[in-house]
Length: 348
Ligand SMILES: *Cc1c(COP(=O)(O)O)cnc(C)c1O
Image (cartoon, rainbow, N blue to C red; front, side, top):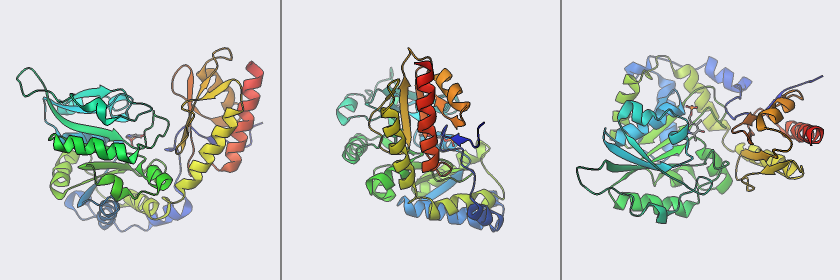
């Protein structure tokens, strides 16, 4: 009999804590489309301040934040350079193409990390045959790269090259605060290299809804227009913004616990013959591992784990992702390791 479920599928599954719910219940609100929601305004100011930007915009999701981020830099017929495994390229329905007429130029990185040398020569000549290269988008931490932190010097070099080449830069920082906590490099320092930065409140920070896009006042004013046409203008959004604000105030430093739990989980996985960490290096809160096909498929492994009260996500026929977050503690990690050992033994 399963006593409790430990949910490692994603860091989006967290529920607001009682203190966060209290902050939401008490939030002062107004009509944010009229610019009259004091809580949304406070959240946007705080996000801008943390990211060292002039302004920020509260949006319903990371997908919308990236969509608008690309949109403020590019027009139809422009091209964005991005990493081939990136979220914006793989998991957002190519919204930049569907809705903004923008082409993507994916470049294969190493666990999500692009090297500056790979980008030289990618800018299209000014000639009527070609799209116009306009933007470089990076992702930090990199989800499919295994929660990989982009090396700071690499980010700096890529963005310097982009700006010197007349390109804009956008950061998908859905999990930027994981990189901040793991490296000790402040968010504003990472963000200074980018014209726009998107951060998610609904991932490791544990808020129920929303992301923010930060940048110059001009770009964010433009972003506000795009948010409206996409249907992202919300009214008394202070209710949910209060959860995000609470998360910024109370849930950043604790991401270190998630990182420690991810390492503990990875250590456990590395002791199991039928499983292999991939990548082996676990930088933050995401752990990816491969199931030996002689045991069975990733789906089968996940189904067997579920019967033991542990939820994980099969991301391919052979690969599984586990994310640590606010709602899984060390005891859940130990339960998961025990369950994985049991399951692996049974099939092997
Ligand atoms: C989750 C995620 C997004 C999108 O956020 P949603 O709020 O789910 O739309 C974007 N980029 C990365 C790297 C993510 O992990």
